[in-house]
Image (cartoon, rainbow, N blue to C red; front, side, top):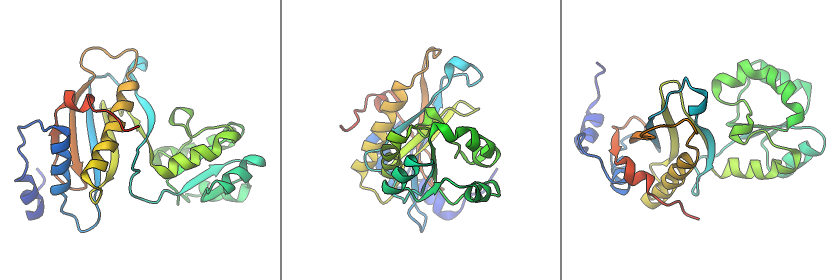
Amino acid sequence: MAKHGKKYLAALAKVNIDELYMPADGMKLAKETSFTKFDATIEAHLRMGLDPRQADQQVRDVVVLPHGLGKTVRVLVFAQGDGAATARAAGADVVVDDDETFGKIQGGWLDFDVAISTPDLMGKVGRLGRVLGPRGLMPNPKAGTVVPAEDIARAITEAKAGRVEFRLDKTANIHVQIGKASFETIKLIENFAALMEAIKKARPSGAKGIYIRRITLASTMGPGIKVEPNAAQSMQAVE
């Protein structure tokens, strides 16, 4: 069993591990129990009542958090011609429309956070799957990162504003960043509400019984705080 340091144990002492906190109280506690010297990330971890082995029980979608993630998002776009020009005008950090940059990525260069592609280049981008896939950077229509040239500007704007992808992993869990510990509590709550609404809407056709079994909030390296699932699912996202 891993040993925890004094700071973690002091933070853990503030948490009642047997209590299911209301979302607002849980979020306040997640901020309060953040003890890192850097601005910690607040994360939501959901245990789902789904079987990830079944095709009709998959969850994968995106949500635009109203207050973003509190970090600069570097966006790379695979596009050519007018699409490349649109991407540059929309503020893409890197536009890949040449073989040299493709080769650079194939060699392991991954200095970006989100990759977007137009459909016409996906055949070529697919060859980068072994590099992009393990890092979760492979453009995918379900994640809103394969878009026609006319939608590139919107996709870039959303990515930089705080669009995050969520998906069911092999252990039937969903892990999502929802902001920074330095955020005002209300902003974290509103980001969390937007996430919960998106996850509810993404309920797959094959889901049976309890959809969301457990929800835990935590800061980077901080203790987990259990949140009442029904209360979390009743939250309303900010328009």
